[in-house]
Image 1 (cartoon, helix red, strand yellow):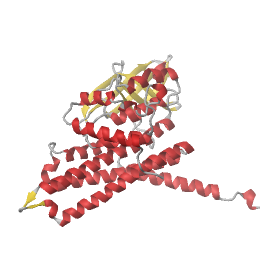
Image 2 (cartoon, rainbow, N blue to C red; image 1 turned 120 degrees about the horizontal axis):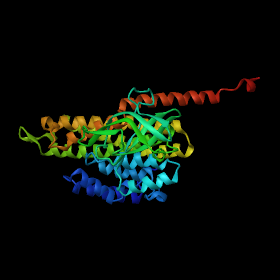
Image 3 (cartoon, rainbow, N blue to C red; image 1 turned 45 degrees about the vertical axis):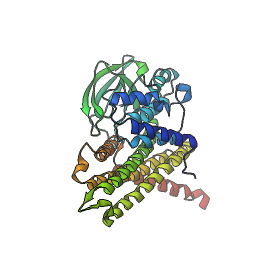
Image 4 (cartoon, rainbow, N blue to C red; image 1 turned 90 degrees about the vertical axis):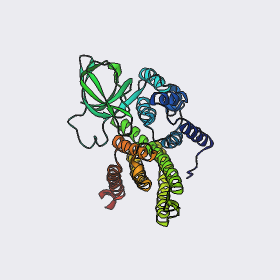
Length: 380
């Protein structure tokens, strides 16, 4: 098993790293236009649908570079989640309508899928869909939709009589009201209320059921791990630079052996997170080829549990090592922590994924035990 990037992935990572360094201070709209212009929204969109048709490892190489910026760019929800859900649609006409527009940035489409943890329990405010007079009626509430404040349309996950379904809800739809919110990482989120929102039949995405949504979520978790690794690297660089230049009592902080040990521990944790994220890409691809949904979910949950915990730890310790000024917006370290908090709110915190991983592992072991148990017929 090789954990090395290909030449193309390395070049993509370096190009994105250079842009991140040059784009500091760009306003969010300009950043979105640049990301679309580079073709980064099209990375995971199939070639037949106007995209680049690249794999998860390519997306992770890009995500790691973007993670160093700690910027609330809506690349992950658009290029990974929305693109993945639309690509799972089995209707060619619907794919042709939405995927090319997403890939080139003409339509800013953001997912509003069932909340992380929503599959474990039914929430009172879950969006529900009913068939009514040849159209669809959606009712419900999405309390906080990351990156949805500037969206042209929302890809809404709803519960119907046959389980989960997904719909494209354009901005301006009667019965759909979006209220802008400020996200913790500085992004533009929204609260989406659906009160008798009427949608035509072609707003429904056939084939995008709960299983398809879960697979897309798992891929997004692994890409989020790569973004967190990029954030961890940036935090370590900035913290080491600070300790070398900050002078107290006539000496740089970096000569303090206790602080050097703390940074060394963080560097070891960072390498563990990087290896976990890279290995998860390969393991997820293997599970997808084998059609093993349980292993697919377990790999993603385990990776996010590990990497998410490391990212929070490194961000919090970086702030502490910077002292009181570490919590200010003038320093990027505080922005890195806010970005990790936003990822946790969007995709689920490390603790939730750790419990999910344990549950899936126990189910796999139970299934293996049942399969290896001799049948009554064979023991006679």
